[in-house]
Every structure is written in structure tokens, then in C-alpha cells.
Image: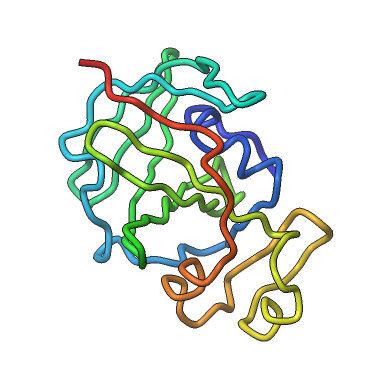
Amino acid sequence: MQRLTTVVALAMSFLLAGCFGSQQPAFPLSSAVPALGAGGRYETFERVDGKDKPAGEVTVRPRGDGAYDFVNDKGASNPVSFHPIADGLHVAQIKLESDAGYGYAMLRVNGDEALIVPAECDRQDQAKMVALGVEIRGRFECRIDKVADPAAFFAGLAKGDPISKMVKIK
């Protein structure tokens, strides 16, 4: 899968440990919510050996279409929209570079902090995933283009402990 240039810290673990993706957006922009409010600058952290390790900064800018632009320190940008699901979680729908489609990560937003909650493709009930329309490509890639209800799908996944976070810089 192609590397993300601006949301690596946000979604690196999701990309490496069980990627959910699609060629077309699973969620319409009309269902996007302003999960990060007016945006701003965020410090990102990765959980390494039980500790939060700084991973860089990202600027989050709201867009007119309901999504955000995540901009790195070099000015490269990726559009990300947030879609609410059960239990106070949001699915981040990340537009990947060129024709790579979309990637997905789950977050729990709490004030000025967003925790990335993993749901690894290879740790799910594979038979159930196939029955829901998931195309399993090898051990670490699950394509959800044929999933009928993406919000219910993501809400029903087995989830792990947070693996990274974003904290708003004041």
C-alpha cells in the first residue's frame, strides 16, 4: 500500500498492522462531522513499549466539504473526513495518494486529544468478514468496497488498545 505523506503518525500502525481500504469512499462526505472542531496544530505520538513517543506535528484545516486537510511540515496534504459510529468512535476516511483509494482508521476524540484505536484486519473473524462483503487480500489487507453498511461494519470490529494519538497544541 502506498505510504501516506501527512498522516503517517495518525495511521501508521493501522497501515502496518491490518489495513482496511477501499477504491471508492465508503462514507459520503455528507455524513462527515467536525470531529476536530476548527482544527489547528497537533503533536502526534506513537505508543512504543507502553510509552508515548513524539512522532511529529500536523496542521489540521477544515475544508468546505466537511473534511479536513492534514498538512505536514513540508506542505503536503491529505484529505481526511470523520464519520461517527457506535460507542463514541469515529472512522477517519483518508484519501490516499494518486489512485490508491482510501484508508480507514478509528479514533476516539476527547476534547483536544484523539486516540487511534486499532482494529486489525487479520485479528477479525475472517468468515464473518467475507460474509459482510470484505475482500481479504493476504494477511494484512481487507478491502471494504462491497460492505453494505460501513458504519455498522466498523462498529462491529474487535478493537485493541490505543496505539497512537494526536494532541492539540495550545
